[in-house]
Structures are given as structure tokens and as C-alpha cells.
Image (tube, rainbow, N blue to C red; front, side):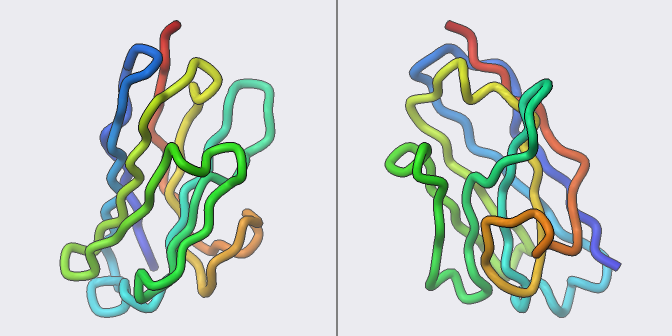
Amino acid sequence: QVQLVESGGGFVQAGGSLRLSCAASGRTLTAFSRYAMAWFRQAPGKEREFVAAINWSAGGTNFADSLKGRVTISRDNAKNTVYLQMNSLKPEDTAVYYCAAGISVSALTTHYDYWGQGTQVTVSS
């Protein structure tokens, strides 16, 4: 079993930055590096949407077109942690941000086997 815990969300003014973290635990202590990791977000009344993903070696990343240039994703396999750096935040970025782990990089929620509980990001105008 894999447990994912997100942190780093909060309130920020438009134009500001946040860095989200996702710490993995459980049997991943020896297998975290084998998982592709991703971030999704879900705003009230909307479907969960892809934000960014990174493969096991951190050599490959993928980003939602709407967020390219404003977000970066990285991982530290020694710390079992993946990060999402978000810059130039806009009010429309307000959502609950979820971390996910899966076998391969994908923009589809169905490709990920494990999910965190989410962290709220609120961007004020």
C-alpha cells in the first residue's frame, strides 16, 4: 500500500507562488523511485484535471498546456517526495491539488493507482 500526503497549500495573492509537496510512505520506502508521480487539481463543480507528471527517473515530465511556463515538477527519490512549484498564480488556479502515483506518466486519472487527500490552494485577485 502507498500513502501520499500533500502539503504546502494555502492562500496566496494573484501573481504569487507556492510550492506543494507530496510525501510518500508505506511500502514505497523501497519502491518510490519506481513510480511515476503526478499532480492533478479539482475546482468546485469541475472535474479533476491534470497539472503535471514526472517519470521515475525525473528524466521526463509532462505538463498541462494551460500551465506550461508557470509550473515545474520535480522529485527527490531519497526523500520519497515530489514537488510542484507554481508561479504567477491566477484566481482560476484555485482548487484542491492532489498528488498521485502510478506506473507511467499520463494525463489520465485512471492511470494512477494511489492518491493523496489533497491540499487546498486559494488564489485571491
